[in-house]
Image 1 (cartoon, one colour):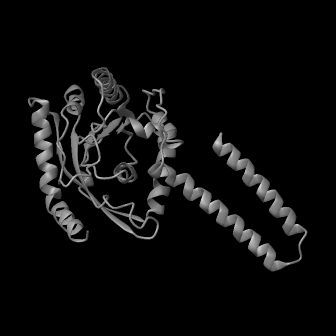
Image 2 (cartoon, one colour; image 1 turned 90 degrees about the vertical axis):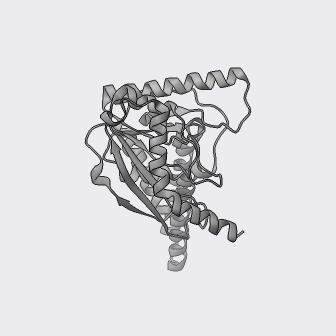
Image 3 (tube, one colour; image 1 turned 180 degrees about the vertical axis):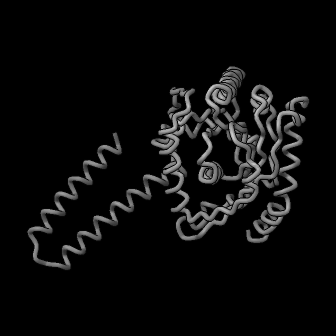
Length: 295
């Protein structure tokens, strides 16, 4: 409704500007009006694409979508490219040739809201969904898109004190999300991207503990696990739109089912944790050191 109203207002402004221009002989005035209108459209576009990073709503979404929709995925990819361009993102990749054909499970560390946007731009050719925290589905426009793509929600806010009934309800919904991921892989050949830390890492740690439950998806589907690392996404909100942000996405290794089928979920988690930790530890130890020195 908001988008429709905004479009009607813009049409009205365009009609008014056309009328003023046709009835004016002042060239400078016409140029000024034209630049003003273009500037207004640009500001609206910036607000439209950046809202998801700085605003949300508390009203919970009750819409569930268990089907992967390529049309909405293309819309999401377009959205991602616009946002990455606005943030001046430069992505440096390595190891992409290791990614096998067909459905896989992507695993990576999680430092920023931008992490899925980096992965989406690089992996757009894969039919892929993300396991995302529930609050993202409540963001206007953005939440509707990812819901229709087929993203699965989990209740990852462990910092909020909850009643036993709320904890039980959260676990039930998380199990549904895991089952949906399994069905999407087995029935539609969709790849799934997961952040095993289950929340963004804002702590003075290189990597948070991995949650074991998500690896149930791998055990039930036997698809390859693609282990990735992300560096450079932690400071995107600094100098927004005025600084070029260099990000590194690296494929570390691929675990095929014969390498993890006999392992327990916690053993898989430990194996992947160590792999990512070893790759990113020097970068983030230096990052935390510089952050403390610059306080």
